[in-house]
Image (tube, rainbow over all chains, first blue to last red; front, side, top):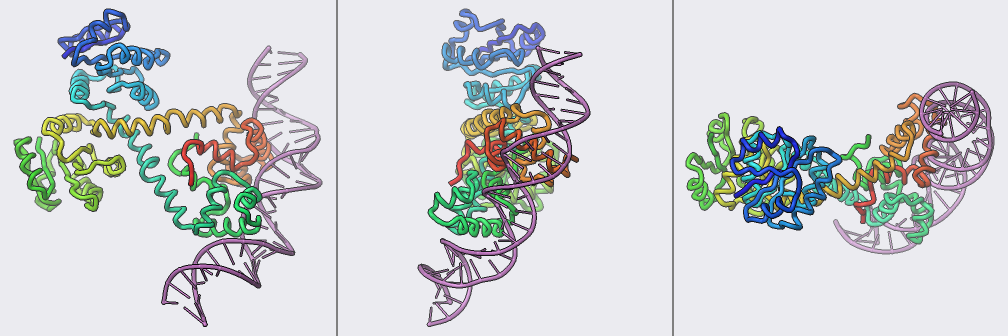
Length: 211
Length: 211
DNA sequence: GAAAATATTGTCCTGAAGGACAATATCGAT
DNA sequence: ATCGATATTGTCCTTCAGGACAATATTTTC
């Protein structure tokens, strides 16, 4: 097992050489680096020094040249978005660049066993957004729709798309008056006071805040 | 450090006793169990035997009695939804009930260091859904908001929450007429024709379809 | 400093939304 | 066969939303 590091930071180089006996530190993805990386059980630690630094690009380049390598991205300023970006680009892990050696060893252990690594905070955030988005939320929408009759549902769905009563009437081949009747029924059943709120609950909304 | 297991499965009991020297296996969350759990550095392995089994309930019960404990849920049939559910309920980890002892030890190591554990597949799925939902989508919303002036943004955000002009006026301490002016400006800038469509684009909509 | 963009408010008008009364037809359950 | 839920449509009325004209003050940009 070998650990290859990519950074231009002197401090990190020192930390890593202390933490990993087998550490080899490179300044960039040079041909020599790729040659060294082309072995089994290689973990590549890629330091994202600045937000401008195109880590995903380097990552893809590395994975193309050395597909079997596991790459962990180390960020000076970890963020959820950045984490998703690099994990989508094929990283096996994402953590803070100044993580303790013990943490890095744990990361290495996990990914050498085929796992993926995200820190606790990121994972927690991920779970928070996903629970509402994937599990709870569609249920809420489904629950709302279940409270409606078939026809009310037809109308409500068009309301949720932003159509006017007239447009819905045309679409469903009924009178505008009938559309109004169904919509009013939806208001009562779902305890909302206007079509905008109806549209919002049928489009989810509740969980994610705008600001 | 101690490991407490909860299951009624004889096979798992045997596996665990072999994997962890310190393993204590209980059949359910009895008072004796809670007493045993009330120590520092306790990892509780909670077996979700059947889908009907209310793991989240047991989990909450345990965490209420022993808040400092770390609980890992072991599922016979892991699913993304179930994982989210138990992690939201406060679990520190979620993995397959028949995971190899080496995996369980890794899980234990990770969570004893303050981490959370999800298996590779689940994490990968999580990242897949979240990349689109969290990274791409808010960009569209951010793009829309960036097209507006500061004040228009203030107003638009309230529109997106479903407030009426009158309510927004009160909230922002301006006239209803001024609210209308800003909203009309938003319509032009974002090329929408009414407040409902404005609300929809600011609440995402595009990705998730209703039907 | 002049010009452009932004923030605020005004009145008048039109059209859409939604509530308040309705009535009638259909269909499934008791 | 009757009752309740659903689907459809009608008129009248009030309120709200949004456009068409505005004007004025402040702030930003060139």
